[in-house]
Image 1 (cartoon, rainbow, N blue to C red):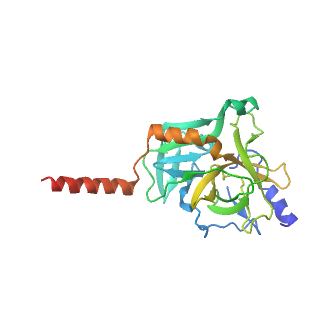
Image 2 (image 1 turned 180 degrees about the vertical axis):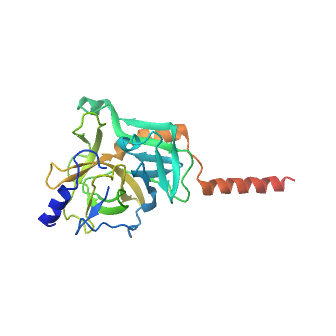
Image 3 (image 1 turned 120 degrees about the horizontal axis):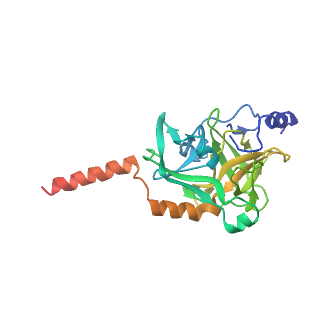
Length: 266
C-alpha cells in the first residue's frame, strides 16, 4: 500500500487498547460497512459498551476485559435494543501458569459473560483453532461497524502479547500486519477491542481470535488478537457449567409444543 496511507493510519492507531474502525485497503478512509459477501457472521458482532463484542449463542458474549470494565452495568446493543449483562455470570479468563511464568498477568484481557436475555435470530458460533497464514475476516465497531480481511502472520500462535500499560491484563495470541496480503486488507484501530476474527473451517465460520490491541511500534503496524483456541477449554467449561439461555425462537417452539401436548391431554 502507499506510504501516505500508512502515515495516515499511524496517526490514528493507538499502541495500547484497540478502542474503532476497521480500515480496509486500498483506502483507510473507505471502510467496508455492510455485511461481507463471504458469509462471515456479521450480525454476531454487536456493539458492546461502545466498542465490540461477539455473540456466541445461548446468551453468551465474548469481549475484551478492558471493554467490559468501561461500564458498571455492561450492555450490548442489537437492533437498536439494549441488552444488559448478568453480572453474576461474568468471568475474566485466566492465563495459564506457563504463560504467567513468561511474565503475563494471572487474568487475561478476555471476559466471557451472559446476558440477561438471549439475542434473537443469531446463530451459535463455534470456537476454532487459528493457524499460521490462515485468512481471517475481522469485524468490529467504533465510529461505524466495518470489516476487512487479513492473514495470520508466520509467527508462533502462542506469543504472549502484553500491553505497555502494566495495569492492563495480558493475553496469549497472534498478530496480523497491515500490508497487501489480501484484496480487502483490514487492520484495527482504537475502538475495535472485543471484535472478532472469523475463519471458515470445516464448512462453517468459527471464531479464532478477538481483537485486543494495536501495535504501532512495528513496521508495518500490527493488530494483536487473543488466541481463542488457547482459552477454549475455559470458555466451554463455563458455558456447560453455567448453562445457556434458550434463544427466543427456541423458547417459542417449546411453549408451542407444550401447549399442543396440554391440548392433546384434555
